[in-house]
Structure formats: C-alpha cells, structure tokens
Length: 397
Image (cartoon, rainbow, N blue to C red; front, side):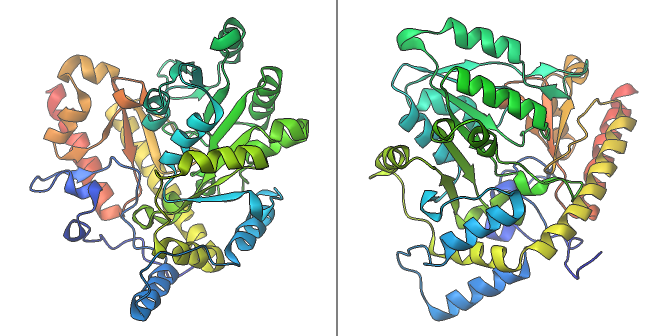
C-alpha cells in the first residue's frame, strides 16, 4: 500500500453510538447496511479537529474565507470544471439539498422525475414537498437486474405525455448511481443532457460518490459540465450536490454543498433554506479543509482497499449463487435476492437472523433486492461473508 494508513483495524464505533452499529446493539449482527465506512479516518481530519477542540471554538461558524476558492480549485483540477466560488451554497447535509431543489424548481402538485432503483430520499423528496413522483425505472441490461442504464425511450414518452400544469420541471439524478455502483458513460450523459434541453428541465444531480471510482484513474465528469457544453441557459437550470462524507467517512460532521450557477435560482434555493436549515457544523469546515489540503494520498490508498474488498465480495456472492453488480464506483454491491426471497420471505430479515445486516431493496424501489456495504476491515468482512455462505449452505440442506 502506498501510504501508512490503517484500513485493517476494526474500530469500536458502538461506544460512540454510530447509527450503523447502534441498530443492532445487543445482537450478534455485523452491519453492512448504511453507507458509511468502518475504517480509521484520514489522520489530518483528526488532527485538525483536535486543534479546534483544544482552542475551544464551538460557536456559530462561517465558511473560512479561503475555502470557496479552495473548493473551486479542486473542481478545476479534479474534474476539469471551472466553477465560480460564488456558486457554492453550504449545507449541513446532502439529503436536505434534494428537498430544497424540489421546493426551488417545481410547484406543489407538479411531477418530479427520477429513476429507480435509487437512494431512498430521491423517491421520498417529491411527496415531502407536496409534489408528484414520476418514477422511470432504469432499464435492465441483464436478467438479474443488477446492470442498469437509463431507459431513454420510456423517459421521453413520459415527459412528452405531461404538458401544461402537469409538465415535468425537475429531474433528480443520482450520478454516480446508488445502489448499483454504475458509472454512467459519457454517451449516456450526453444523451440525457440533450433530453433535458429538449424538455427544458431543471436538473439536481447528487454526485456525492464521485470520488470513489474504483479503478483509481477514471475521472468523474459533473453532469452540469455536459449541460454547459450545450448552452449557458441549460447550465443555469442545474444544481449539483456534493460533499466529503462518503469518500472520507465524515457524515457526522455535517457538511455538504450545492453548486448553483444561476444567481436567481441560487437566491430561490437560499430562500427555501430560510428558517428551516441550520448552519454547517463548526467542525465540518475544518474537516473539509483538511480533506482538500491533505486527503488525496489517503483516498488513493482507500481505493486500493475497496477494490480488494469488492473483488472478494463478488467472488463470495458468486459462490453463494447470488447474482450481483460488480460496482465501478463506491463501496456498495447490489444483489438480486428474488429466488432467495421465494424460499425465506424477506431476505434482509433472514440474513439478520444469521448475523449480517444488509439494506432491504424495498426503500430503493426494488423489493427482493439487497444492498451490501463492503467498506470495512477484512477481518469483519470475512466474518460477514462466512455467515452469509453458511446460511445459504444450511438452507440448501
């Protein structure tokens, strides 16, 4: 491994009531559900926060003056997208950004389109804001439904059918895709940008998994950059959501951002935040600066470990006879458990009874599927896979 970072020690996270582990307190269950990692964090983050704790600065905190410029420079070097620092709107979490986008870009009763299976808040945000959900299922590229792409024909038909007051105004896009781990191709994203232009859609793109492309060399391309290639007017209808929480395992520090190029849309978005959205945690800004300044070697070492874990999980699931994705990005495997469900009922509950906690596919829009988080030290991952294998073998008799 290229840097002396610890991806082998199992952390005691239950002492600090980590949600991932708290769910199974008192039970012999290894949690592979919620999308955070069980690795030791970036040392620079710990050091930066320790310095802030020692200084005793815990009050309301503004973003450091240099931080927007640092983030803009990172976008230019990492993604080749030149953003104006003034486009950045700081948020204490990404999920609320989905709800704010729905509120800012559509009116009550109007449909909001997204593609299932998808991270559950995409399916819940429209109803939360009194909008209609228009779900266009992703097209299956294999019989198991674990390899997926955008169904452009179905999307075009649905958008064309909705006119007048029921015209679709907003697309919620998960790019890269959760739960499948799919990295949409340049051709797919260009075609989607054309469709957005044709139907004058606003687009809110959740790109929080962008820095977890597992080959370590492919660069993420922000969807807004495809919109910008077509016209300034199309870029002006974009909101890009991002944050460091998934890549650097700091979800509890509460920092994310929206990139909103259009001034009027940015103002509308900020108005939707008023009296509802709290300030970013004082530790969040410090952690983000540590990530931007010192995080890249740790991220590269993390990707090595995640590739090893992904390949181990894929081999184990093959041995169990469970069809699954081989994710290109992030640390989540998407599993077809339909045949297993016919035998045991709810497969997620059944695996819990055998000591492994997985995410049920129902909230993602796909009952009888499972999502497995493999971002944990090998000693725990091996135990979890052994428990799953033993349960499958015993079921077969």
